[in-house]
Image (cartoon, rainbow, N blue to C red; front, side, top):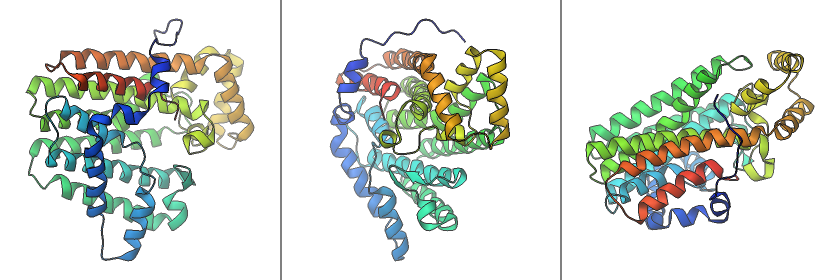
Length: 343
């Protein structure tokens, strides 16, 4: 792995002072319309479904995926109703994956409150996740756009493949860096790539610009997931809205742990790997030791350097797109924010 001495990028402080809402300001009205479409799509004759829908979507979140889709469209032309509906579909799909992820992980907390599976039980949570997928693709099929349907379906399939592959390798401390990248590309980056390419498509972009936006989103997505994995060991429970060290407790070996194992002596590495394989050895003290070692050995900084390399790649593809306007600046800042956000 080619990593040099990490230095904070010159825009680090700017990214962490600026609000995400400032970045998405050009599509703020469209994002509000996304909320309306989601709420309308999830209305049911069954009270329990309406209750669950309100519970899942009441916190809102940053709406990263619809924001990316809308900004990618706005780079070429003002988003219309169709684009807003595509963005709503993307957000519903994303929330469906979160619901299913929490079931798989036996998660207790999501966005600083009780997870759906913990509150209503696994059976209802599984079925509600399925309901969300159905409602999302109902919205996405409205316009009969083959490009949209194909790209979202391929991305959703890739998410499943990535999660299956990761689940097959939990508590495996010998997972390779290559396999780690395969996992995060499949389960995260490809969906963000679909959002940016579909946004460009809705904006009437050329095939070349659509492909450049796909690669922009793909590299942005790699940076986003690496940053998420870093936050798992660098932020407090209160900040990230879920228990810190959650990935390692669940046996998921992420980039910070891979880099840490590269740096430790053979004896220490063997002890850490044995505890991971043992599963039961992943208690709070062990998690805290790994977090402490990561901070002491500058693992957080080195992992963020890798994320920033992906951001730089995303810039190259964004630069190749034909429009030159203020939206391109917003997309550039969007990518930086994804890699260096604090929560």
